[in-house]
Length: 165
Image (cartoon, rainbow, N blue to C red):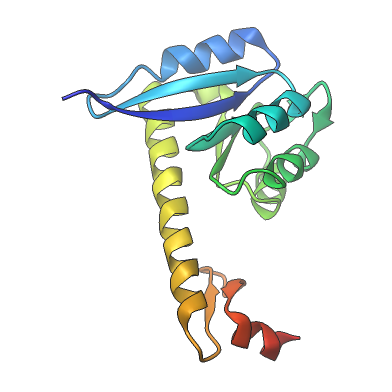
């Protein structure tokens, strides 16, 4: 049986890093990653409008965008998992990236194919489950909230939103 194909949007301005990601994502037996590469947020936004992606793999330091602004720009057009591929190693950057909507954070220096593939697959599955839970929340008539492990509300149905307003 042919492996499942998942299309990943890679937003990385350094060609060497993009090539390393492609090499790292040699397919496991059950999945194949088709990597669409672009070098700027502007190009990524065009790609996101024209194509469907299972996940976005995003560098935070691009010619036309930097840091969490990069995540915010992509999030305006993409509600799938955003995995950050970055050379920033500090916890503050990781936390800011998470708050801006990043699903996972992978360091360029420790790029390992199996770990990267696993991270992408887990992020895709987690996103799928969150979407299903959000749909379930919205069918309830009573006020219903979906909270993250830190008790932050990440989704509410109409009745729940009325309580908050």
